[in-house]
Every structure is written in structure tokens, then in C-alpha cells.
Image 1 (cartoon, rainbow, N blue to C red):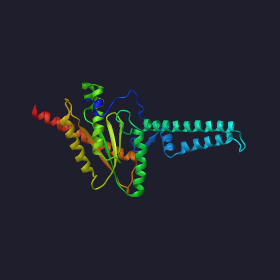
Image 2 (cartoon, rainbow, N blue to C red):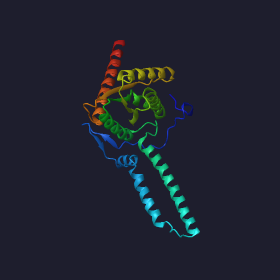
Image 3 (cartoon, rainbow, N blue to C red):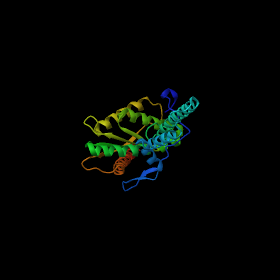
Length: 268
């Protein structure tokens, strides 16, 4: 399974700014030990830019020319304004890129763990207020260590990219899709009659089958998936949802391994 520019410009960057530093505890609480998370949240709310813009305006006011200023003084102040505007524009672009690096996974382009927690918490609050239910899927690639060990890390990365593409084709643009570390992915989706867990599982299985029919590799992409439902009438934390979906994913993976072993015993 190769990743090449012909596959849509997929590249493996030497930079990895998605190191997880935000995590959830086994008890279901989301634990934040990362000041950057709060900084990004503040910048989303506009606090950072507003504060710096207020400071810039106050500084410009101090050096503003008087009403009877000379032409040279006015020209000098005009240059200051242009430089200030250029600096604000450059900083805005820099902050946009910084937010992107802070919230997205460098390899797949999906949200990373930090991005998922920020957006996931916001969506849970919104769902509680508006009364709609959510589905949280926990996805893990089967036999990923064996793929890495036998085919190498570049092939392992190609499997991660294929998994990301399958998830993007299975879920809607409005759903939150994230790679939270290693070969683990999570998705938070709004539950509707057309977007039930059964319908999503069916779309995912169809996408996997279609991919594996086209892939020329000794290893086929196989996923173990767990799901948890958020009920706005009985809300739980994001950490609890993750724990429930993670446990179900693990049970399904263990059941699949047991079935494979049983088939091997019967055939021997």
C-alpha cells in the first residue's frame, strides 16, 4: 500500500507537532496539562487578538500627529500605520498556521487529540443545550504492529493515510474526525435517522471492502470499532464516552482474534 503524490499529494512530513499532552483519566475525566490548549481556546474566542489590537491602538494614539502637523509628520505617521497593518496581517496569518499545527495531525490532516478535545467538548455542550444526540466512534487498525514490523514504517503510514481517507468518505463533513495517537482514531457525529450507528457501520464496511479489493498488499486494512451514544437527557462527560467506546472497540477486537484462532484450530 503506497502513498505517493499521485494519491492526492500525500506526504510524510518530518515535523510532528501533534504530540499528545492532553489526555483523559481512567475515571472518565478529561485532564488538561497543556497551557497551549487554553491559549488556543482563548484565541478562538478572540481574546488574544482583541487584547493585542487594543494595545496597538493605544500605542498608535500616543504617536498620532496633532491636527496642525506638518506634511512630513503626516507622512511619517502614515508609514507607521502601514507597518502596523502589515505586522497585524502577518501575525494573523501566523496565528492561523499555529492553530492549524496545534489542532491537526501532521500526517493525516485530521484533528489531533488536542483538537478533538477542544471541539468535542464544545459539541457536547451544544448538544446538551439543543437536545440532539451524538455518536462517538473509537477506531483501531487491526494488526498494525505486524504491518509496521513486516512492511516498515512508511507502509504503516500509508495504512494510516488510507484509514483517514476511508473515515472521511464514511462520515460527513460536519463530523469531527481525529487521529488521537498511533493507530487510534475517534469520530464524533450527530445521530440522525439517516446517520444511525447501523448506517455508519454499513458505510464503513462497504468502504473497507472496496479499498481492499483494489489494494495490492499481503495485508488488508481491517478495523475494530466501538461506539458510545451521548444522550442529552442523561449527559455524560467526553472522557466517559471515550472510555465506553474504547472498551467496546477492545471487546470487538478480542472477539475477532478469538474467532480467527478458532478457525485456525479447526483447520489444523
